Length: 74
Image 1 (cartoon, one colour):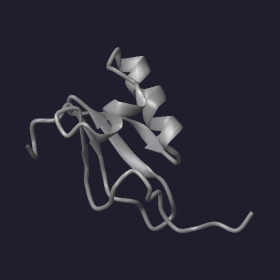
Image 2 (image 1 turned 180 degrees about the vertical axis):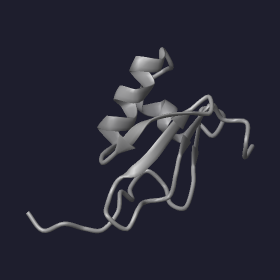
Image 3 (image 1 turned 90 degrees about the horizontal axis):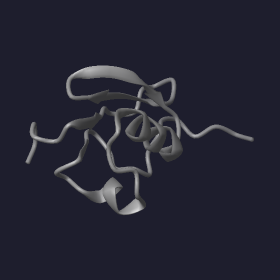
Image 4 (image 1 turned 135 degrees about the horizontal axis):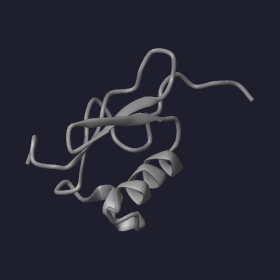
């Protein structure tokens, strides 16, 4: 269903984080899954955990929802 999802989470950047677009508009950079959920909420889209795996809602490019960029030491 590539290209049909209203939400695109782009590949992790080398500096960390992933750019997020909703309906073709850049809404910001997500550094955690909670950031994506906040972008969904602000756009009035479903934000339930089950929506994260819905390919009709979110297209994860380059990696799935577990990847956010380079691992950082605490």
